[in-house]
Length: 267
Image 1 (cartoon, rainbow, N blue to C red):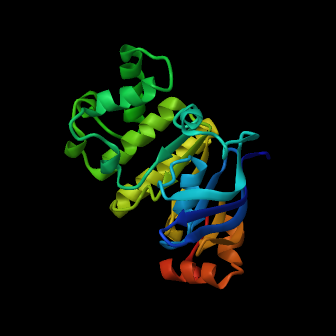
Image 2: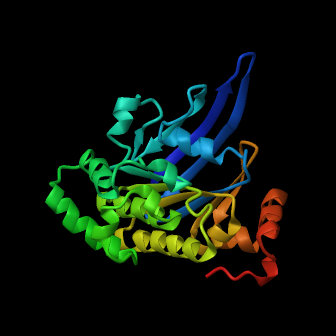
Image 3: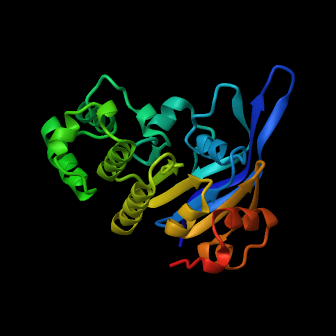
């Protein structure tokens, strides 16, 4: 099985007034094509900065200090923003937490999704409407035409997250990167969102990289797991290895913080 993404000796740092603070400390990992991989860790572990490095959206005072990011056998860590724009969306689709912040509250959902999708592929408004309605219905949302004419503030967090998933399905990217996609959602909606990710992976052989602090999410969806702590990658393996025989004390503490491992059954 080949790797769609390879991160090699990645170091990310923040430049402050008086110093440089390293927040990702020379990590290495590979993401296998067609699988679901989770990067798990607490706040400040470096997981989000790692993802922001991959898609080239680091804060202004942050920079890649060293290392390389290989996507589809090409080094994307040296690309400028205009070059990365050709990859973001069509090849790498990102879904962030708090979806309400990802949308313009004064523009209807249909117009926003059409603008996003048509900027990455050649499609008419009629073709878009036909396909997006079919996709939205497949995500267990009724009345897609009504939803597309609504504004973001009229939809729940779970519905907005599914709108992002609908856009991802439409564009058929090589990899979907989702940063805390179930944060602030109720338990039932969380399970539904994770189920949709798994269905996408199986139906389209899409690679999915999920960033989370929650080992419950990992248990639901992951094939492979990377554990980060304070900028270091402290443990990695397939989901069965991580749950049945965790090696690092930090991994063990995260699992215990989520549930009693003895009662866990990874399916």
